[in-house]
Image (cartoon, rainbow, N blue to C red; front, side, top):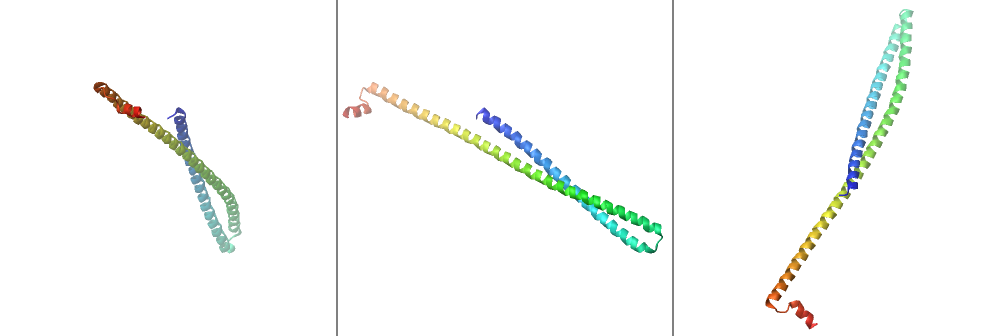
Length: 176
């Protein structure tokens, strides 16, 4: 196998590992963004419940002293402001979650591309190894065949010299 192919395979292996790390980081970011969205949704739900309870309390306390109603009214305004802020944060968190999911999807796509490229190079290496092995086997077979044939011809020559009879191939040539 050529040195450049080995180098390419090592580089692709490092690239695939790096891309897998990016996928892992992107996935962790998605999970973190999802947790933030869930936390804000829970906080919004709790805040909405507090607002409902405070409104019910104000309606019940209409006959109570004015300070109590005023304090409850201020508390209700603070809860309304808090709800507004929570919903703004929730909208930002949902936007960030969508962005993180996009990054995760992109990282997975790039990792798959790198893995396919690595697989293609591995297949190329295997093909070249198989071709080299087949060439070696072919050369060994041809060498063995030529050696056996030359040994057979040498044996025929020795036999001919020993018997001094014409070789079968010589008689065929003479008759033509």
